[in-house]
Length: 172
Length: 172
Image 1 (cartoon, rainbow over the protein chains, first blue to last red):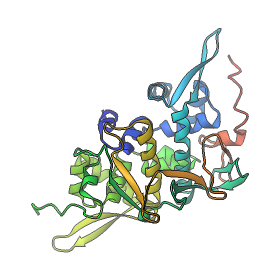
Image 2: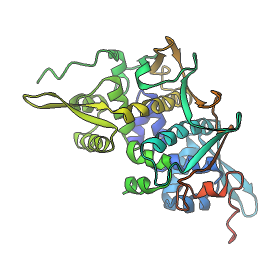
Image 3: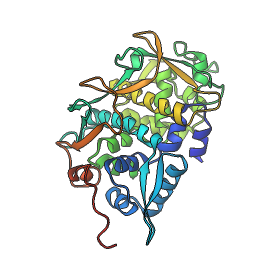
Image 4: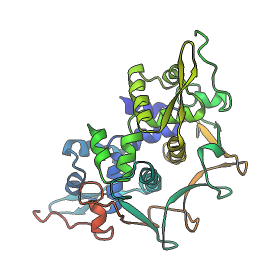
């Protein structure tokens, strides 16, 4: 229900959440990225019910984020691999991890560290501008209505302009 | 229930989801970032029930992501502002938006465009390495166990090493 209404919104955050925002889904993608690809390994590591995992995996395959690959013929056995779309979600998960490391740090400190293979350093994922390479923060970005902006819930706000939030309810 | 079990995991993605991963929450943060700060404006723009919005806002205030600010005394009226932790979540939302623009594009194209005030250009949020500035992708990063890695669900996997996923179930 909620998934469908999110998917229908004219908002790419909502539409991403309709694919990857359900409870458990980011952790399933994390585990597949970390190398757990089999159903039984995923249930065991996550402590998720088999029904729920089946539901989530089916949705992710249908959405094109995971693919189900047969790795053995007799008996047939399958594992789950990230697709290109799935691989592109991984850095976004890393930014959530970095936020959690800083703001809701688990006991003992960050549970995971990331090494950038290209340069060999431990690093923090940093969100930067594709044009100038500078850091992107909430206070250095202005969102504008794009070509798909609509009047419906989702991006109606953008068509009003960020600098001019709506007046308080006139009925008050 | 799920929220509590996620918060207890030794995983900074799970702990971030316990704060900001619930259904609707990223869209509430989006709207507050875009300048909608009042309860009635949020319910109207999101089409969310008042009970659910109250629950989500209370949780976000308690978690330190939003603060409730009195902007009028008689009668008392409140609005919601992003805290520093909340502002730091915004770029992560932008990476979800960019993924959605590309992989689940709404009809008509991207509903929003982002301008980087620092350089004045329309841009795509890009996830880069804090050390070398190079692009971070799923295939150029190696996750390692950090100081807070534990044997429990969440990061047990990291203690096994990414390059050596567990063998198939020996019972099979």
